[in-house]
Amino acid sequence: MTSITAAQSWLLRAALLPADAAREAWRSWTAATDVNALDEASTWLLPQLYQNLSTRGVATPAELTRYENVFRHNWYKNNLRLHQARPRIDAISRTGRTPLLTGPSALAVAYYDALAARPFDEVTLNTTADGDVRTIAWKNLQLRVPGPAAMLEAICARQDTWDPRSHLLWIVDAAVIVRRYSDLTIEAGGMAKAIDRLRSLGLMP
Image: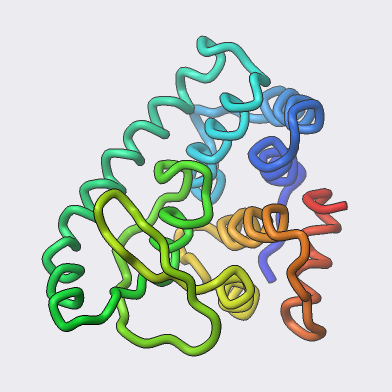
C-alpha cells in the first residue's frame, strides 16, 4: 500500500471535511506546500479541493483562483468526454437497454457534488452488471450506475490500482460515498480494512 505524506493527509482532509476542519487542514497544507511544485498524485485532488472549499465558504474567491482554474478545465474535459461517448450511449439505448456507466466516470456523474470535481480519462460503458445498480437521469439521458455498496466494494478491492494517476483518488472516492451513505453495511475483509484506513486519516468519525 502506497504511503501518504503528512501534506497529502492535510490535502485529503481539506478536500473532504466540513468547514472548520477543512479550513484548518487547508491552512496546514498551504503552509507546507509549494503549489507550483505539487506532486502529481495531489494535483488530481485540486478540483475536489476547490469544490469543498468554495461551497463551504472556507476561503475567498481570490484565494481559490488557482484551484478554480483547474476545476473549470476539468469541467470542460469531463463534458467533452461524455459528449464523445454519446454515440455509444445512444447505440446501447436503441437496443432497449439502459447504458451502465462504471468506474471513475460513474463516480463523477452520480456520486460527486459536481461533475468537474472528479477527473476521469474515459467513459466506461457496459450493458450488464453484478450486484446493485441504480438508474439516474443526467441531462436528457437515462443511465445506470453501480449502487453505493457495489461502487464502494469495487473501489476498496483495488485501492492503489483503482486509478493509476493517483493513489489518493481511491481514498477520496471511498470517502465521498461513505460520508454520503452513512448507513452502508461495511462487511469484513478488504472493505472494512479500507474504511479503517479512511478513519486513520481522519476522514471519518
